[in-house]
Length: 129
Image 1 (cartoon, rainbow, N blue to C red):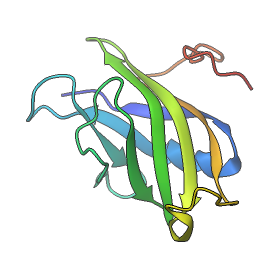
Image 2 (image 1 turned 120 degrees about the vertical axis):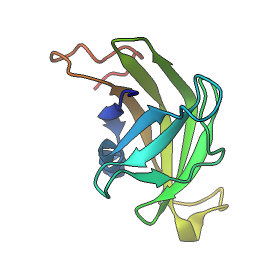
Image 3 (image 1 turned 90 degrees about the vertical axis):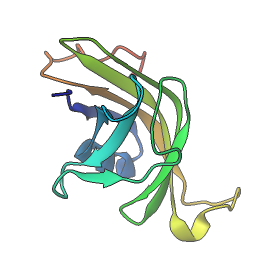
Image 4 (image 1 turned 90 degrees about the horizontal axis):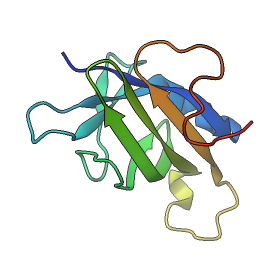
């Protein structure tokens, strides 16, 4: 079974904490190193991202919790024992989607890892508090 790479650290505006409900998991029905995003707070429901199958270095977007999310500088890697991911996020209300001057935008960075970590160990993407 593939690992759940859970979003554990979010830095930035408060809305980003919603990301801690989500995790990445490899999609074993397609070519290797492609991942999907899931909602652990809603019976592991698949989040429909654009594009659906996520790969290292690919930006993506999705709608979740009444917000439109955009993920940039996305990185993800997995070995037999650990999976890690990270990137930048921006969230805006669906009503502001497409409005470049929206004042409700929130943003920050996130990091994800499978398994457990010791305090401070997760900071592999240079994020700082």
